[in-house]
Image (cartoon, rainbow, N blue to C red; front, side):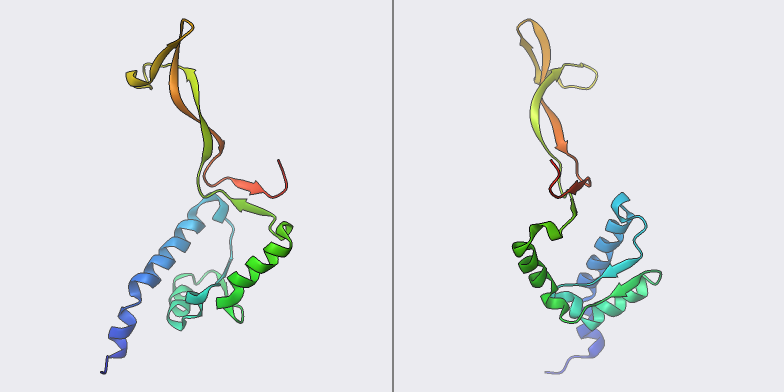
Length: 142
């Protein structure tokens, strides 16, 4: 079987475009402001097609592709396993919190959430975040 190179490259367009879109979205977030270097790691980062597309889309960024980029994630995981403090901070992927009872406000809370507790009108199931999505979490700090 013989397939034209352009058609074969087209098989990877969606994956490359989604990867570029995700990088673009991350760079638009507050944590991505001021980033001038992109480090490509993982198996797909070894693809010359992806590298070419990222370099052409992010012309204003420095693109670094380390040797054995496909093994970089594994090597990092091993290093983290030996010394978890090599990671200084993380960005929360989700919000984390608990459900609480708060003051009921009929202008913002649905009537189904209204409860009376010891004669006081409260709203059940209010989400009280401990950590908000996108927040930087410093390692080793309570």
